[in-house]
Amino acid sequence: MPAFNIDGAAFALAWAALAIVASAFGGWYAGIALLAALILVVMPTSALVISRSGDLARERQIRWALFAAAVVVTWLATRYG
Image 1 (cartoon, one colour):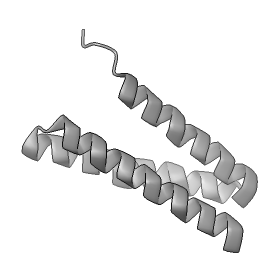
Image 2 (image 1 turned 60 degrees about the vertical axis):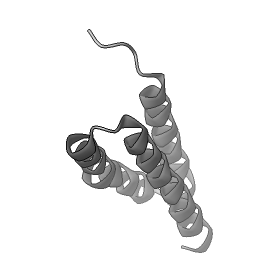
Image 3 (image 1 turned 90 degrees about the horizontal axis):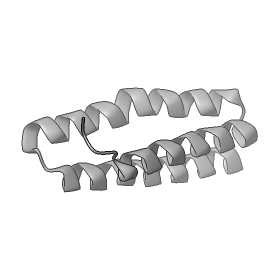
Image 4 (image 1 turned 180 degrees about the vertical axis):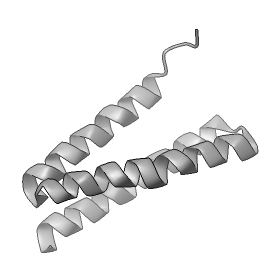
């Protein structure tokens, strides 16, 4: 059995917290949009990076960069949307 991945668990908790905050401030559609982004953008991107390069550090950087972009977009959408 593989070792517990603390970074992956932290990312999952951070994304869930972002979805909860987005749904609280932007409505349920904001939470659903974040769920869709996770399933349709983040997960395939992570799988593609790992399958092509096998570089877990690069995958981690891309995953957290996508999270940062999601935070900015969520903040802008709830503030100005």
